[in-house]
Length: 554
Image (cartoon, rainbow, N blue to C red; front, side, top):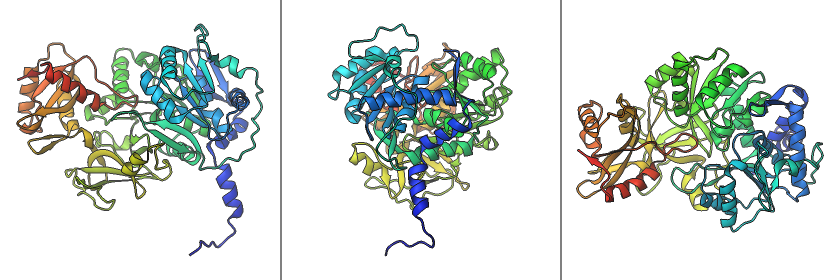
């Protein structure tokens, strides 16, 4: 049966599909907010208005055109937070190319893998990672047409075959680029790579409508407006950095971004006071450091409308401390590279619901379905809403995802199913549909046929006054199949494995089979840029540590 309508859809369809793009939204701000601040760079001690920013972006876009960059070509950039990052985000969209930010902390091999996966026409790297970038290019099979180096100091020597960013853009006009190909809301505009909690990163394509509606999501949930000034303390290259108070929503609504190149808690608080920031964004470990500094040296945070955190749940005690010391308006989002955040905790949910991931966002739906060894749980095969039964968390976010991975049909079929995203997290939910994450499916430890969720054990260990943080994994055990080992970062150097063993044995909320059998003290835990623990790295380390007798067994 063919579709029929009660009105003529022709003009709406044509206008919506070709005009409701992210770059059109930015350009609306260029003329209505022409002389208002768009980007402030404390290092350069300079502010760019929307009109100034647009002219600079145009030079870059016209340089790309002169290099033969066309629709759907990839412009890859491996940059720390900077003005040039914003240029790389916006300029490709002006010519219907794809902007592709990647993690500047990657190894040369991982970077080469992504270069070969996306085959960029242009590759832009930060002078701070010059050695990594050059080694990656030497390893990669694909060679970009153009390699550009961003050096905010102007002091780094430019390698052979590379051009400095300023020299690349300077000869080109600052007027709007002229292209011969149409733009569409389904065009891929942004390509992200997952943070690699389970191995090599996967390419996540986002179309223009995903970028627009991700900005709308933030505008609703902060809420964010043209009078706001944001500073995302985490790197912008990932979904939480780009889309949560980063360039994407702030420049779409007409607000101002303050660039934080390197995270430092004291510097961050100084900038809140100096630049009158209204929203601060970062992972929970960052908030802990802000809290510790603010206690010792208080800064004026009175203009903050809120601090938004993501990447990990907030412990109740931490939440209360943050609300008392930093701002009463703490927000916590939970989500993925594939679909941005999908649940949200607002200030009125906290501290009561701290520890949970919140309820689904306005345009999203989140469920917890039963898990099976041989198949997916169907979207309507739900676990009980009792806060106890564990299942797999699935997400429907039609506005913010393309439901696909780049060059990876196998993973696409595994993760995307019937309009839902099976992201691999396990959790519970209650009668009000608040989700609590208990771990990832591939992080689960099976000991003596019992399922042990690392997050629960970690939360209990972290409550010990001498523990700064911990991560729990399983190691092979002849008797049990797997045994629990805890890697612990001390907050007090006098902490011993004996103390932890006694503490766990006496804890009323930790069953005997869940207690760590082994301990190892380390200086720091491996995190992704989004603040998620990288359990798979510790699992690999644990196998070697077990072989070499590095565990403390009580």
